Length: 467
Image (cartoon, rainbow, N blue to C red):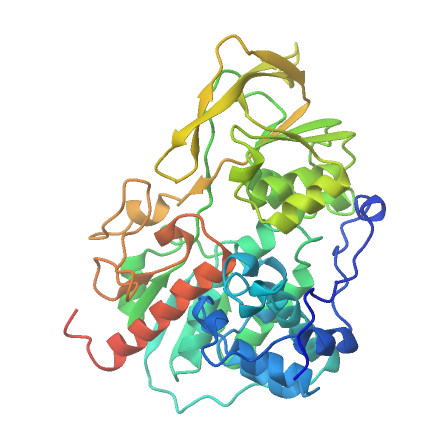
């Protein structure tokens, strides 16, 4: 048996000079020959550590082997046994920290490019026009309400439909997809792909109702009168701010608003879409997660002459995916590390025009496991900025707990669940995704959705009386 190639087959993409001038997707994806070449690197481990590293338990060796053999139809069939959104996961999930991190090939070189192969097989299916809809079992007569159409909600819906239950998805926005449509830029996840994956869930049999605000249109208690169980997957859409002087100035956005205007409401196509957005010349983004990288890279595409990341720790502590950090650097985003904003300066018209910062040094690790940033006295300095995007995290919207009785909540506004079943303290109500776990990845949200679907099925068919 020949030794596997040490390095992954590279994926072609737009040059950094070209891509900052458009919102088109950056990577082009594998060709069939490239995918088969990459698939041939997999050594088909018997213990399959990659499967153990996958939150939704995909048969990774199985779908890769089928690609190697050129049986793409078999590959996508294996994939969709566990993952109803492979085109999305193949683009935005951090496989390098999950399935690829434990790949046996890491011992000799780069891991199998699991994410790229996942993306390839999903795109192949769409391009072939032969999308298979698996048969569903006889209807059980049980009805489940899924609140939120993000990755957790869509996973729950897909799994429950395949178990024979009736599912209705309720979405607050006018388009389904949750964070997939409002939070992730077009150049990283085209919205046509999200729509394609949602359409698959609908073809399985799920019903979708948009512009439905839980707690306003109807409450969880009212849904429980109509359905046998309710799943809450409303995400974490309440932005956090630093609460420093000048933060209410014009030109200071939460990342949530900035990205929603651009992504969901297509402000980047103004005036074709009547959604204005401030196109700053010097844009500062506070934070260094994936949302920060998305915001900084969006600013460049909106015409910023300078786009800057301001982060209070060093590059080793940045939580964003390595791939996203590298692409931001390639595109010219500046990184101001070990730097903490402490106040904003405002012009005579109320617009932000400068940020006062302090330099930091790192001390001992804090509760997050990262080194604690410590201010350096006397290190204050000012930098010009006409737009600021605050991307330091989000918390759950309080509308659900404020309108739902008997629902135990955590100190950060999250719904407390049993991690093994996704059960809440309220009978018949389950929860998953960011509203339960706090901010996490798309695939982690899908993982909690899978856990919830199994527990909901068990609850409504067998053990309803034994909550």
